[in-house]
Length: 321
Ligand code: NAD
Image (cartoon, rainbow, N blue to C red; front, side, top):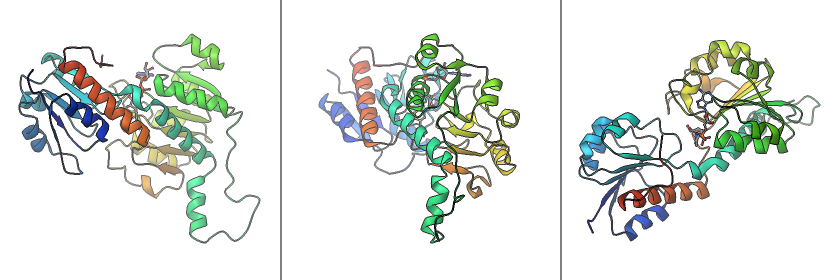
């Protein structure tokens, strides 16, 4: 049995690493708590059989070629795979996998957290209270919005969009949605209505984005779309930053074209469009929608399971199309 070499680009929970070591693989991991530079990544992947990458690693043709002919799998520790060059991997016969089974529920929970925090101005109110500005109850202090009986527009009804809808129903929201494919079963189950994007934006009090980052979804929400939304609407994004034109978002929030936004992902992550962090009507979280201990462990296990399967000539849990 050959001693397969696996490289992990950054520290992840131990459970997956132990699984790989238990196979007798030679496992190396970036010991630094930072993203590797391209040069470092290229140096470390030489001669490996499997790469466990993170969404912050750009795995392109150059990296795949640096790894060489032994490379059989790149197991991405993420659901999104816009950091991987799918075509280049296909050409070289390298299998790509992700961890979609791991984080759906956690991302849906974070999305609901952002939605509730936006409607009830939780972050602004916390800052105010902490600053010692609370001098007594007032009827209009931090007046927010109810969410029950409001309309949630979900764009991208995949695993996460669906999990968000299931939770939103419990909060009394009405669901409208858009996807490239209609889902009649979902419509029946949740009384949801399928709409084209302009009509969804027109009708929704909350809009939540759950599409993958693809050429067709880049800047899905830009200047024109902000103009189509209600002035009282909130935009939530836990998908990928470039799905929103971030400069246009700053303008829309400044002009109060929409009431607010809550975003976990950024167009040029970790950078932010100028002015975004100066606005009160936005909640910003640092790409943590899937950051729970349970989910990170599941992601570690799934990535390791995929590597073991492929190195043993078996089918991994999930491959990218
Ligand atoms: P999924 O593949 O199950 O669902 C995506 C849905 O989007 C599919 O139903 C697809 O048909 C639809 N879609 C694709 N292109 C579209 C378009 N142009 N217009 C409308 N719909 C379109 O994926 P998922 O597991 O639900 O994850 C969605 C995305 O969430 C991931 O691709 C990833 O980028 C992001 N994500 C973010 C975090 C985070 O930490 N913030 C964590 C996990 C996933």
